[in-house]
Image 1 (cartoon, one colour):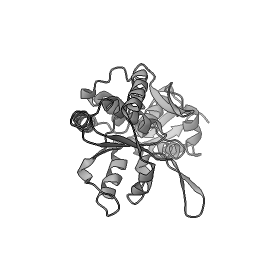
Image 2 (spheres, rainbow, N blue to C red):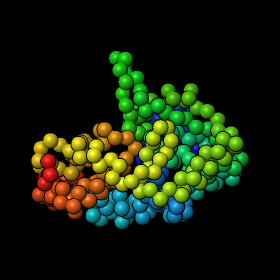
Image 3 (cartoon, rainbow, N blue to C red):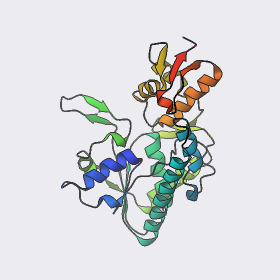
Length: 267
């Protein structure tokens, strides 16, 4: 059985779980693309691109020499999509892990599109992002990448088969999302919605450290603690935009953007 999960953090955790006694299978069966499907135009999304251009933009917002990293990830994405298409053709079972966050849900819809005519069984596990703690309180996860290897098998009772009719219905939603030219997608009222690129600007500005001078890494880290499903490179890109607009200025540049020291020019 192939296991599809969103992103290398979640994929690495799931691979470790597959190596344990509580979870059957082989770590080599875990597919973990990073397609950044919540960002950028989806109209020009042939699978063979691996979303290289979108990844390049996100990576370059954080580090200057990002072309090789973006192309390497795009190739890994292409390999995953090819394996999914092959699984649909040869009947290999596929289990898709998802969550009510934009990036995970976009990948789920894409998987249903690619597997809509699969000859073998397809199932899905939707993991709630609100998880109970031992003390009775709740912990809010931002993505499946925050799950520990010991947690994955506890969600297997949530697994549900996805029959061909359901897969075609989800595939239709993916087809509809292809016509969203919005620069960003978020979960609103339980569904994917396209929004403008400044959708999170007010929250990002409110999340800036209270000091006048701070690092870009601090700013993005504070915002990520309040947001789920937003790539950090997208938020870094908004800081670049504000610098260009004069709302921020660079006090001390750095090769790695998160080490760059920024200063507010507006309070």
